[in-house]
Image (cartoon, rainbow, N blue to C red; front, top):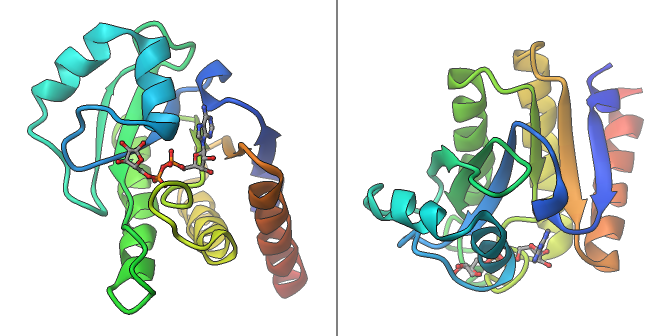
Length: 176
Ligand code: APR
């Protein structure tokens, strides 16, 4: 049952000892606020040095680095869409973020990964819609890649947790 492999975690993604944590970055990959700022703060300056060599990342794509001082082995940097009302391919681009991360999970044979609620902070993507996209794409990835053991959805606020609970509930009812 792939649903059993999805976990909710309330707290700071930088504390998680997993194969990879996902960073909600911007196209420069040169750091920022929010979870991007937290990850760079804990990882230390060598993360930025590695990011500088990546030449940025287009929205919807993902790139992998080391984790440095983070407990996580890797950081997968993905760039979510900025919410502009929903008529600018935002949903497709957010779906692409999750798919791009899972391509790297398979390439690097990662077993455990943790996601923040990509695009739902500074980038303003509505939490409910983003949660539904996340759960749907994670469900597909778990079905396609039996080697994947745990996918953690990190909730940094109550609204995000509620949105994920709702999205997971929909999934359970639809798959029952
Ligand atoms: N751990 C887990 N989640 C966190 C953390 C943390 N330490 N800090 C923030 N979050 C949550 C936010 O509460 C939100 O739910 O991560 C989610 C994504 O919010 P942002 O970090 O603002 O990311 P996003 O909306 O994708 O905007 C990306 O913000 O920080 C800049 O450089 C970044 O330009 C990029 C933009």
